[in-house]
Image (cartoon, rainbow, N blue to C red; front, side):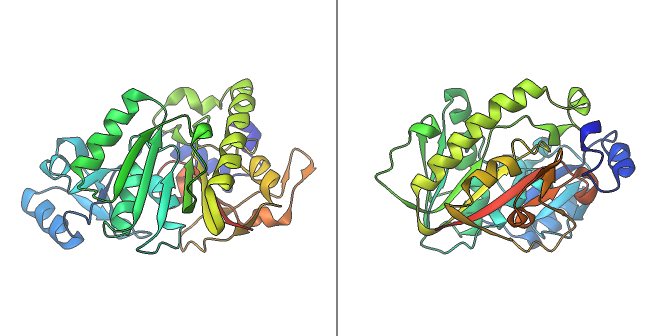
Length: 291
């Protein structure tokens, strides 16, 4: 993590927080229930909870969500707070056609379904059969009626159909998960970062090919590495206009300099969230409007 000491605000606090256990977070699935009903049932069961300030549908809970009957009934979904940020960057409309290019296990797909009140048309894709099983199970359990599923390498999805919104929650070096995975506290392997950044660039290229003119693309990773974040995003500034999502919670702006290299001022419109800012994991988000 030392290479990030100059870019992470309150670095000492960050290092203290990553040594602590990450809270159990749930999202209320409004396709099946309401925030009011979940609060009532938690109180009746004596389950301690705290509503997240940044998003009223997210709660910290005192128990593992997988043990709760609300989980098995599809009324809640176990989802860390930062994972819920990228879908909220979209300006969603009820008749949108959306593709989630790397969808499994379905956290963001099912969240978008609920944000659209089970309307519109969502295509959820993943390339691995074992992950497709969990994706299908979660879509069914959460009652998402506006989702279809395909199994492809995202780079090979046909471009005959264009989408209003494209989400790439990209495979990454996952440094933002360091509270749950201690080995990541030393930082990801530099060679892994270089290799996966090439895949991410290819996925972003495909996203622009799949998106309608004037449509929105949201790119997210759960890592701190600029090679996977701003340095990739900068390659696509001639194909899309970066849009500031205007999030109303503590976060940091995208980097405009890394290792002595000057980057575009436009990258300030990207969003970085560190574990000590939302008491969750880490995430990076860039939102494009396709030119």
